Image (cartoon, rainbow, N blue to C red):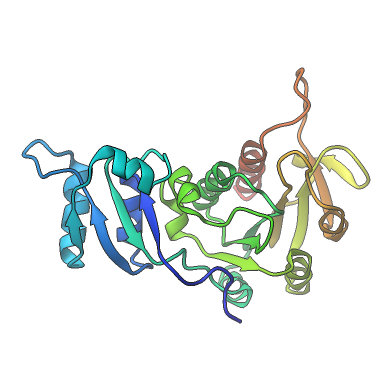
Amino acid sequence: MKPIGCGGSEWIYGRRPVMEVLRAERRQVYEAVLPPSSAHASDDLDEIRALLRERRVICKTMERNQMDRLCHGGNHQSVALRTDPYPYVTLEDALARGGEVKNPIYLLLDHLEDPQNVGSLLRTADAAGVTAVILPGDRSSGVTPAAVRASAGASEHLCVARVVNITRAMQLLKENGVWLTGLDMEGPKSQPYSQIDFKGPVGLVIGAEGNGLSRLVRDSCDFIATLPMNGAVASLNAAIAGAITLYEILRQRG
């Protein structure tokens, strides 16, 4: 099954994201934009230039206002690459990767639309050793250049599947022995996140900004986890809530 979101090219921007694209070697790189060479260049720029030379990538310079337009106003730090789109894997690939480890961790994002949230969660997923990330193919942010920037390039080292039907993906995970926990506000089946057993094969499902988990996704979860809210604000940012729970999974595993 071909992954969703293939074809065309895009500009990845920012020094760390560009460096991680080059280090990961998962994308075809067509051209690069860098600041003019200088004897006082930083170590990260020197490494980027060396990696580009190894891959024989054409480099050019560009005025800042041109780069601002090229990167849609993103914080590019005068560095950008034109590459293939993000190399999504199939759901079957993600399941196969999970079969290679004793207790895999899957992160499922239920129609998150903010690339900053998606990127932050991808960065945490990489740090926490998540086995695979699963995203729906519609009404959600994929691994866009803005999400890559927000992940500081960590996305380039992750296994990310984009699927047509996230509830069907959840069913396949359950058939493979994965217990699914959704993060949501109080409601049926909900319990404190620290009381759920995360030691075996698990999938953590994060709901969309504002709306939380969709009904079918919520109904497909084995458990619903809540985080304590003792202040005046009634909820946490999706990326923060996801990060807290991913590290609870790691804590329980010692």
